[in-house]
Length: 286
Image 1 (spheres, rainbow, N blue to C red):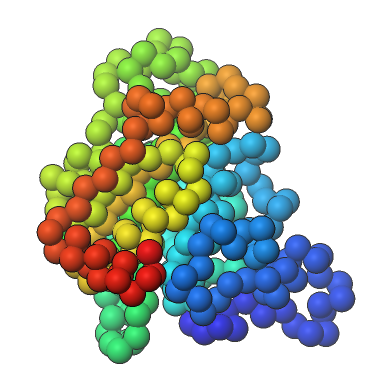
Image 2 (image 1 turned 30 degrees about the vertical axis):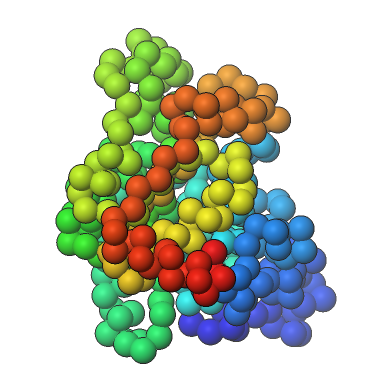
């Protein structure tokens, strides 16, 4: 991995769409203080990505990409879902795993990187939906926490299997009705953030993506703690506005409403994690 992570052949550049060229020429590599305030001037994700118009996941992905302190030496491991469709549209190392085993794949990658580059920081970040994280992949997710793997896991919680027709997931709210769940969810939403705490995560946060700066702070804290201490977990509400019957411009308001109830900001850290975060703050990296 290097600063030439994404480099267009000069002989072909005149034929490449400008927004693809911008991924190279307007990226913010090599700046640990990078953040969401750079978004108006930098390019992390092409505009014509494959997510639906107004999808909160696209905003979440942009905020996360802009907040990575070390993008040139970061690998994102993703799983089957809406997000897996958009990773070809970013300029970052990504690995697409099988549905649900993303934390196992990330664990192996992190261990190999530590052996291959013992004197260099290499961040591994898992980014998957509620189905991959909590339903099909729950065992791999929790086992990586139990083993204290030094990776950050981010769950995009849209509370439904959004890209396969609208089935309920373990994170669907009790009583919700979808096209492929006509009787409504029969049991309560799984509190994954609490499972993460109980399973040994050193930093855990639950929030919506209605506040870009808050997302930035949470992502940076999670990655810095994972580097030094152990597993961290971030739970982001990214509602599938189509499946819950909203218009494409209603996503932000939906998240703001949930900010006041089910997804009121929650943050947990162990004493060791707090030490790391305070040190990073002293270095003005947060």
